[in-house]
Length: 285
Image 1 (spheres, rainbow, N blue to C red):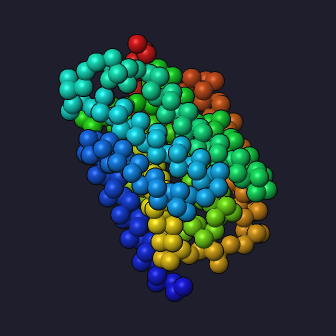
Image 2 (image 1 turned 45 degrees about the vertical axis):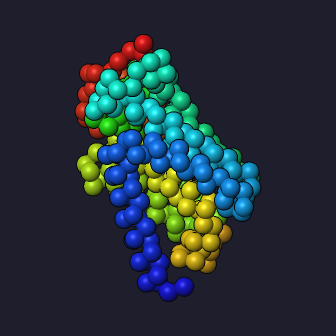
Image 3 (image 1 turned 60 degrees about the vertical axis):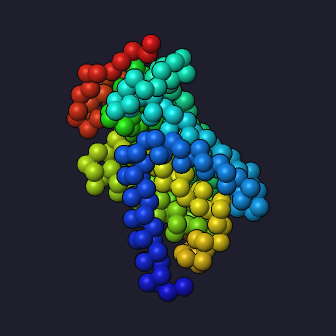
């Protein structure tokens, strides 16, 4: 496959994903309806688009939580205040929602970590475990929020955590499914670049939610699309995989100590927010 094909297809896909994230952010009602509607593609999943326990676990643990995010955003959007009433919608404004979303992020990392272990990529799996350990808690909504005009999911992960997540996940895909590595790099870069271009690092998780969900739906419905456009199986090298995993583990160990130190000294509310103090944390009702 010629180099120009990789370059063009990857750049176009990254751009498309970023446009999708932006549109989903701005149009919360559309996003909710769209992801509910994505379930009609289920027959295509069972026709060969989704194969193996990991792929089924991954798509189910991404699409349903994405739908849940949509309902939660509707309930918390300032622009829709007063339009969604009743016990159901009131419950979606409570802190338990953020704990569920925290759990979903934890689960998605844990799934890949388990798969990494089964593939023998031990050091990268250890990195995944430590990523789970260092996800900021949504306690008192200090680091997780659903807020703003469109009820955006804001998660104050650190820049270092975002980077470590990206390199860990890229290494995982490189070993688990080399043929899809290039397309997976696209969704990882789109999630990294979008908040950077917007100047709002706290948008990383919501960008990751929509890029990953989009990618999984496309892959489930059109399993031959990415291999045809950007087959990266020839990029695989066992030595690269091994040392990449080791590097990821070496990088995350000092981060874990820094993370724990910030929590222990009470500095996390500032350092995790990149120097911005939040005085609006709300006790769960």
